[in-house]
Image 1 (cartoon, rainbow, N blue to C red):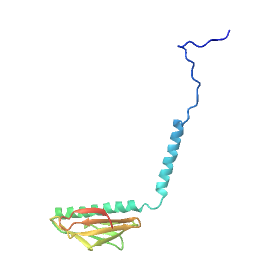
Image 2: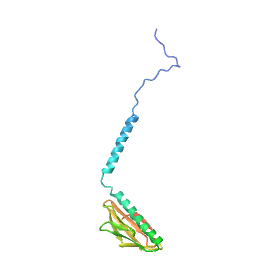
Image 3: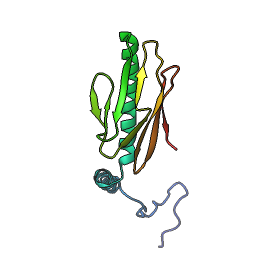
Image 4: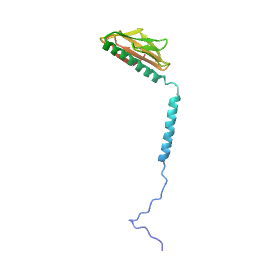
Length: 150
């Protein structure tokens, strides 16, 4: 006697097929390798001068703002100057050094901040092989702004 068809309420189990794709462990191993390579290359690659130039511009702009605030609080005029030869800038209170890749120029040679918040005005130009950033000081308000140079 030959078996007949299965009743309709009994369904044969589908044959197990291997699903295409990656396991979670394989994905984690690949992501770990990519993360390690990225970390290694970000430290070893040259040409990160743009980031250090932006950081230097933030530092110089902060020193300009601090000089203005000290002039207002102290009721006396305070100078801000940059020595283009050594890369040192002086904000009235202390002297700091620019990163080695950054070159600086200040027009005019010194910016003077007055007790009323105004200044003589000027432009601090920071440059490197990667670009240029201008830090502008408004003569009337003493406001300090940072912009990409031309």
